[in-house]
Length: 233
Image 1 (tube, rainbow, N blue to C red):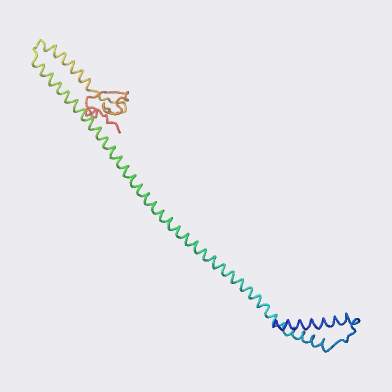
Image 2: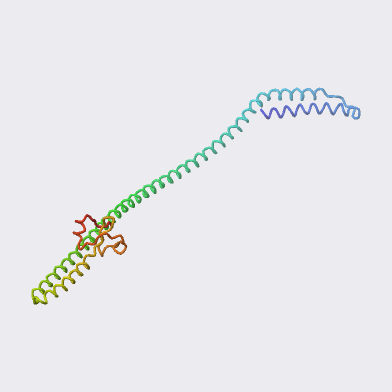
């Protein structure tokens, strides 16, 4: 139909051109106007043009539709590529989220292990502290027993000497022995009783620091009977 439109336009243009040429140059050429040539071309051009116009009008929207369809296809392809890219991004984010979840679980397990180890260390420290307290008590008891044994040995030796010595010398010797025994007892009674109601043996870490001494005891049992207690570690 476009071909008919082109033929019609050519015929119409030829007829118009022929008429214009004749009227412009008729004084020079003095030719006769040929109606048999003008009107057929004019009519054929008009008829072909009029016949092809409806088809051209139908083809124009079709061409527009085709261009619109092409644009829609391009948009569809672009959307498909965007959709595929978004899917890839989603998969990447999902894998990253899974990795982060695994790392979180690992860190939670490590935290639980650290917490359990911390509790174990606390229990061990508590056990060590209890053992140190027991060792201090045993050490003080051992020293007390040693002092008591030493005191008993001294008393036994002094009584043996008094029995073997004469009477006249016994009095003087007894006086010297009693003085020595008193000195030994005073030297052995070196457990300090403080104002706070705590006794400190020479092996105690606070023994040298204790200045507010109210009483001196010869044994731990004597200090405890007097109402004093051992120092806390």
